[in-house]
Length: 432
Image (cartoon, rainbow, N blue to C red; front, side, top):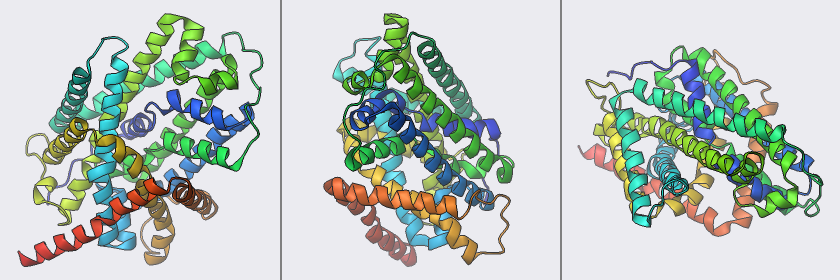
């Protein structure tokens, strides 16, 4: 069976990591974090800790990716560690909810930010979101090189714009009273802030979906994850230092769009417009990366006989999973039109973290299950880094279950709904 060609280099894979992770969170979430933490040190600390923990997870994916450099990534790792059912449930959540729901959420956010430049009615916003999803999907269906060039351009512009805002803020006059406290540090406040940071760093796993198309994966996959997360963490911490340089914590806590407020303060009205443009570029890069990577999960499932065979076909001319990309776009557009993407986005982040946790734990499982398998890269700091990630992931999931009980139960129900679907699929395949 023909495989997808390996055309992605180290820089391409790194820009996929950076482009997907940096969406709009760094411009919006500092408001939520400042409302729940009492000092600048605590705010910077939670971004550093969240970044390090995400890096530990990325290191685990790096070992697995170098060991099994196959298209589908996370789906493949779960299949090898825990079996078909677990892998099917991962595909069920990501292909039907997490990826298209995230793309739809970002596309609608793009239309909302575009309204800063062009007044749009609600209907026009929907049309813009649909056009963006269809346009980027078409580019990625035509060729992985074309999709990667979009990723290179928009991620590079996003980084440049963010660096410009950070630099302008750092060299602006500092704000007095920057360390003034909002409230005492509490467990609940820390929990909310940490959860927000982990969501802002979310997306580093997606590069594993295209592992089968990365050149020299034993070297480039671990390197792209390390470089990508290093860049993201540096930008996130620098951005927060810049915000705290020109705004007090109470001001940040009271400002919904912190990035825009900082840009306007240091560069005037043109700065606010420029920041909105940076957000637009950031969102396009994130959507493109999700489209490029996300379609590879149903593609890998179909190759295993766990999804419709058409999803596993490679276009004879473009050498891409064009059908899987087209169906992903169609489903995403349906979510946009019906508005159901908003609910899916909140539900799937919890179910997705279940699979992130299980995938990182797969490093331990596979070292025992397949001790003699070739491992070109071994997770740095193992087992300490692995245990730290698993401990924080367990806390995150339990905290969500306690404090967001309804959302967590719906997330679990969404994932569990794949169990009967798996057995029905297997039954149907057995009858053919």
